[in-house]
Image (cartoon, rainbow, N blue to C red; front, side):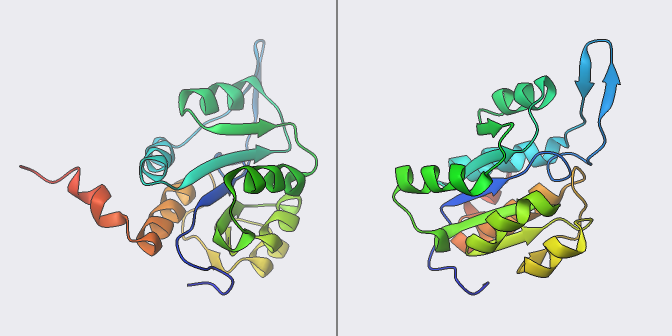
Amino acid sequence: MPSGVVGKVRIVFLDVDGTMTDGAIGWDTQGDQRSFYVRDGLALDWARESGLLPVVISGRDSEAARGRMIDLHLEHYLGIKDKVAVAEQVIAREEVLWGVCAAIGDDLPDVPLLKRVGWPIAVADAVLQVRAVAKHTTVHEGGRGAVREAVEMLLRHNGDWDDVLKKYEAS
């Protein structure tokens, strides 16, 4: 368990570009498009069902990201310059401390938030500065299962993983 984590992790903050996606942005006549990994979305459902609140905070705003967040029923804040300020509001509302929060990121705008949480997580292809502050680095790259991997790790830490598995066992 990373130092600073006290008890169950209650909130996981996530970036979008480079964390929930591979960071590539495709443009067409309708605007930008992103690819999201389906297993990441499933893991975020498990998190929510297990009492781990996923909150997306992204520096960019896009229709593609907004649509995916709505599809996944995720609390989300897009086009945010100060991720820490938004996280502070969520933490105050949920009446928790930084030590029971995790964050998953890939690039420099994520560093201030990663430095605050009890469980800072870098995706495998994160920049050096993010990996330097992370207590854990995923094996999977952003947009390629990193979120799924991180959520499973957090659910294991919280003691909720076996309950997830039981839902899929044959009767």
